[in-house]
Amino acid sequence: MLDFSTNTNSLGPPHSLIRVLRENVFDVSAYPDYKNKKILSACGKFFDVSFKNIGLGTGSTQILFNIPKMLQYKRAVIIVPTFWEYANFNLLFKRRIKKIDLLEKDNFEPNYEVIQKTIRSGDCVFICNVNNPTSSIYIKHKLLALIKGNSHVQFVIDETYLLFRSNYARQSVVKYVQKQKNLHVVTSLSKLFAIPGMRVGIFISNRKIIELYNKLFYIPYSINSYSSASLIDLLSDDVFVRETRNFYDVERKRLYEIINKKLSRRLKCIEPHGNFIFVRILTSQTSQDIETCLKRRGIIIRGGHELLGVTNKWFRFSIGKKKDNNRFIRELNKVVH
Image 1 (cartoon, rainbow, N blue to C red):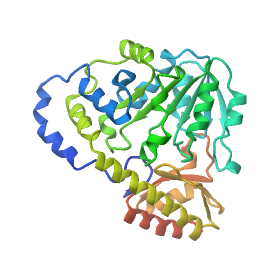
Image 2: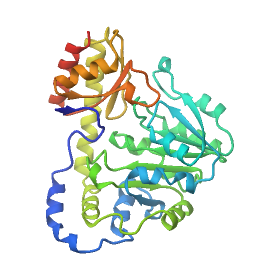
Image 3: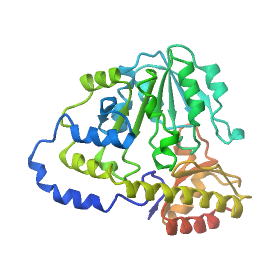
């Protein structure tokens, strides 16, 4: 079964990960460093920020669920369709929610003027960049203009899928967290390094917020010894990161062109900027129909009926290895009619 429904790195974790786990197997009998000095140092080098601006979590989910307890805001502004958890944890903590729709006529590109007109003092804006599921991107200078121009509005930027881009360093806003006190970046290493089982999330913000997070919400020893040793090695593996980003730069463009050329009368593909692609069905079929047909052929995708704020005329698939992508296109050509 080929799984195109999850957004982890299709190249899999680096081969060195197995070596590191074997070398540190006896660490199971020792307590990990509860201050995570080595991990924070490695993260600081990887993200090019001070380790004092970084907090760690048991996955990005744990960090996100603590956002309403850390930041003072009355209303959550969520730009949809997007990751379902943003609405989930805000509802859990009884925050009012204002949604801004990304429009198909704009190819789901963000409308910064609409965002500016909608937000008000006391809001917190949640932005997924690159956005899941649309694979659209927020342009750095336009995003920073919003953040700088609205000092009484909090901005939480999820850059999990931006990590897959070769121009990550130029598009990321992490370096501005100290200057912009209303900017907070959340990201996950699970997707890029294909290690979802390790559950490590990264929180990058100004030092005051990080100190508050570490004091009230970080649980000592929550990063185990295996994760600690693995992350230090992974974050220094420049070759793996570069190869991953180069692969996705080429493959996302190739698949986009193939679908829009060979299947243009049956499918409409939104130009992707992440490691997944968002597709509209132009036939009478629904995403359930296509999902069922593909599953019978050994392929799993994510139908629009499973995605927050998306109709059943859409589906999302992750970008796999080249040979798997070729098989996927062949089977998709057979089932979409």
